[in-house]
Length: 270
Image (cartoon, rainbow, N blue to C red; front, side, top):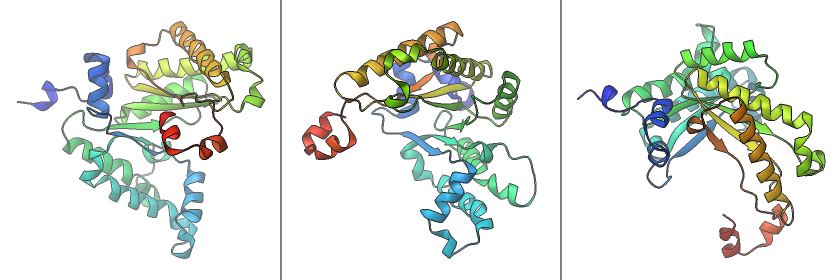
């Protein structure tokens, strides 16, 4: 039988055709054993990691960092064993939107090209390619639409949109999330999610609010943010079935307090 017609291939098709529990296991595995690999470093962050973490300055000139890392990541994605543990890869934009067909730019495209070849080789619906939309707040509507259309043309399954509201001291309490400045960010986030869906790509939204605050403060932040975001999604008529929502669970324990806990207590926190 033709697998391409008997099984949905894109993340969008899977979320559309399967009940949420089944779609979850299709994407992440029966026990959630397969997850997302983040290759979403900005060009600047990638260069810094090559110098500081890899210590490549001892081996290569800085001009060669980008192409060397691209070769390294291409080799990783060419390893079939990776897909036993990984079902999704979120790429930085500069790996996906490569305009130049020559020289250095061609080398930069290698990781995503290798991933796409693996996607063709593996059974349909086995792995999914994403991209980090890093400037969703700075682009106007036309700019977002053009960029998303370019992602769609490249065969992207999902678009990662990250929104960090910052520290509790900067927010000034969970009730401040009703402030027009924050409300505008929720609205813009929902607009971006809707535009992803208009291109039949799944928005994966990472929403970050303070999660280590004492007492019930972290829970209050989470509940408030979740309600405001849900309202914004409803206003923009975003289809809830085809959104992946990611956040940090509120635990109300500081990093130092967690470090001081025993192993059993730490496990109970998740």
